[in-house]
Image 1 (cartoon, helix red, strand yellow):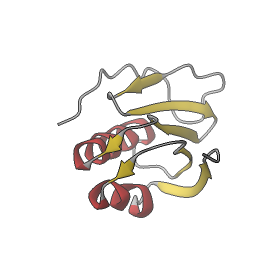
Image 2 (cartoon, one colour; image 1 turned 90 degrees about the vertical axis):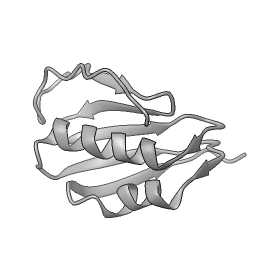
Image 3 (cartoon, one colour; image 1 turned 135 degrees about the vertical axis):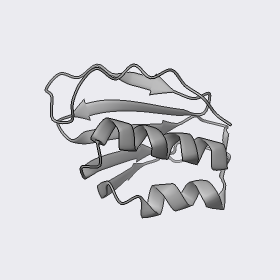
Image 4 (tube, one colour; image 1 turned 45 degrees about the horizontal axis):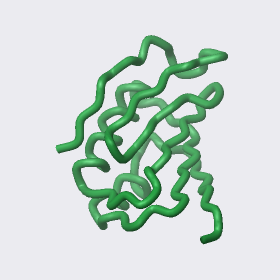
Length: 103
């Protein structure tokens, strides 16, 4: 299972948050009040463990409150169906924006 160090000391909505944490394949960072950026590592194969870790971390960061998510998927090799389930069905995600550069 993917793992990462929890470094969150800020609350949702704090201005100027610098909190970042990651697994080897997913990085989570606050980019503004109520906006999380999830960056999937280029050339990575995103699997169920990455989706589960991300889900747990997003819930911890948001304390169950809805947030907007910017999902960056530039040059990702693959994303498993189980991982896609989090990205498309998470109850705490109020809105998604996708960012992907052309190959």
